[in-house]
Length: 131
Image 1 (cartoon, one colour):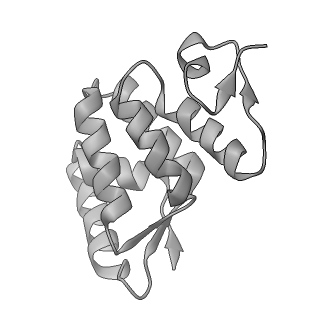
Image 2 (tube, one colour; image 1 turned 90 degrees about the horizontal axis):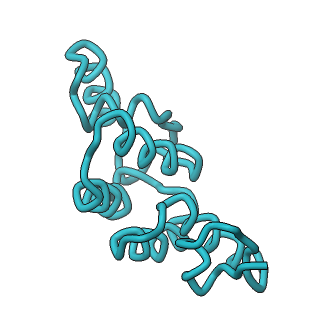
């Protein structure tokens, strides 16, 4: 298994740099298999959403579909996928950042009763509370 950095995924998905996109595609399509998946850790997943939103101005629906595809791809192993799925659902619903929803679910899965936040959007989720 090999780890995939955010910039590899961005180049693969966005194809904004022909040379790097080609290298990323070759890497992902030849080295990432069901038996030896590419590993996407939780930080990379959050960075990916942030980059697609802020640098590329992708709409939320497109980013959500991209995340779902990553989570469903057998050739990739997404870290904490059990927490990423409900975070994706919350993100799709609007009003909350993916990373906030993901943090809340990760903390809940780690045994927290909830996550304290001043973020009004996140505080609406069951995994958060306002102090």
